[in-house]
Length: 115
Image 1 (cartoon, rainbow, N blue to C red):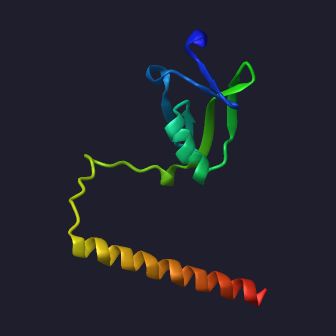
Image 2: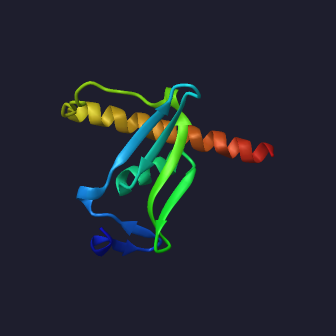
Image 3: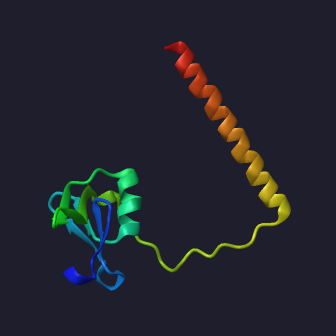
């Protein structure tokens, strides 16, 4: 494995066929421990959870662990099928997004002004 590892900054790129993600749920504590060496999963989880353990090889990150409440783990049946949007639907969604962004900016400005 060590000969096939590519280095990128502080991270180590594990070959795709050797990357894995393991979720272990402790029934007594209700805590889910997530171990991953998959860069895609690390990127997603880093955005929402703090790392609880970092596994290193030659000083570089190979895998990381997270701990989350079991209630945050969900299961889905099948894949989500997305249908193409019509031009009217696309415009409606774009308008909603613009309005929500504008409302958020107004709220943030009001929060800053009130401080």
